[in-house]
Image (cartoon, rainbow, N blue to C red; front, side):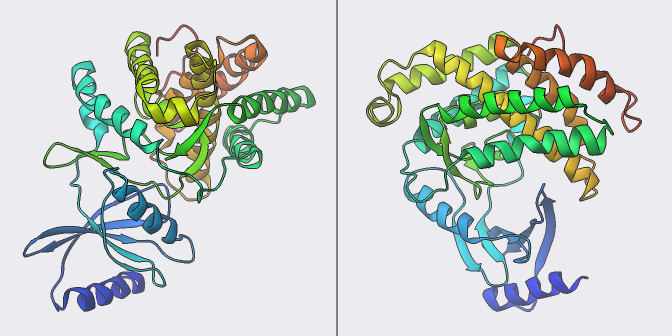
Length: 351
């Protein structure tokens, strides 16, 4: 039993006025946070342990209160101790979207409408207090791909022309993101952060990094999810249904979408935003292994690389970058000794 765990138990005993605690580990995530389920006579709660030296609970608490009032299905904060880094939260259960989505299109077609509807609602929330998803952040995220994935994990030495190719491609993707219509962005809206509650409703978690940024960011996080891949026809269906919903939203028509913004521009924004996100994700997955010793995300890199190539491929400005990914990066990834069974094929796939 660690000192941190004892500290948490002492806080919970004071909170619950009980000397006996029934706690079970639920999960960790890609951060330093840990989650436990507290069993009580009248039900269960989730306890978030977020060490203040690594995590700041204040954004989570602030957004949880704001978004809950706006009708977003986030967990209620039952109690908090920001100084120690402990929260008591409403328990949404253990059912992530991902295992259900893996059962196939029929199940996905039951879940995604809930997620898309909530996303429309999320984008109507005023974002005045949120940090901007600005050029510095977008570029810093894409640099993770070069630094942690290409150089540190794959062990590649990039020559001057490769460095320039990455710089040009990153700048193009950054400007594409900055030129999009803006709204509130969850920033991690995917199948591991969407829950199906015991009463079969949507639950949204892990939203503390929300920003004011590109309107397609959360949509592509959901539909070109790093943890699952869909046929093009299915992805197009869900993406287009979201576009249709945008056309029916008075808020989006009046306050978000500029005059003349059309579906072709929206699709382009979706693709290019996904490419920026997938560059970031690949870099983070490599960093989680190299810096934090978390290997569980490495298996998702090949799929994420496929998403990256598919997002870039339709656009002539990124043709050289796509060729480089196929000819330089995919073979280097396939040679990784950690995953000899993985065949990373980025050409001719059907996402």
